Image (tube, rainbow, N blue to C red; front, side):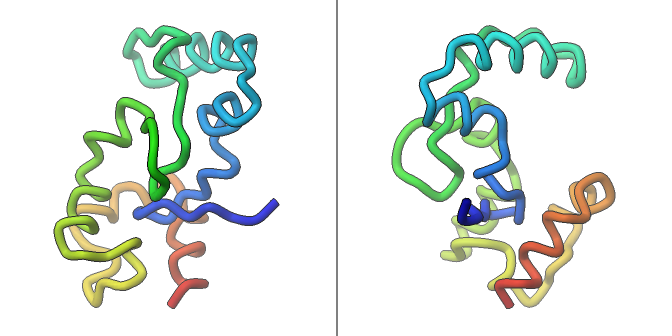
Length: 110
């Protein structure tokens, strides 16, 4: 499957919310809601587990719509942080400590 790189570098094609959305898989939505509620200590319903990918038109996962990294890239007119000379910066470096593959994805785009 082709990578769908988000503004921050996460590959949306591997995201469970994206997979549940494109497959219209309500069982996966329910399982993801339970898992993410525990992992992120924030109650989520299966109805929130919908996303057509960060850079696509359509519905975004609730966090992605508020994401400061995505907002920064969009405000600068960038599709991804790979276009920014400040990569990594204070806005996104926290992510790369827990998801180094996201930074690697961006470096592939440079």
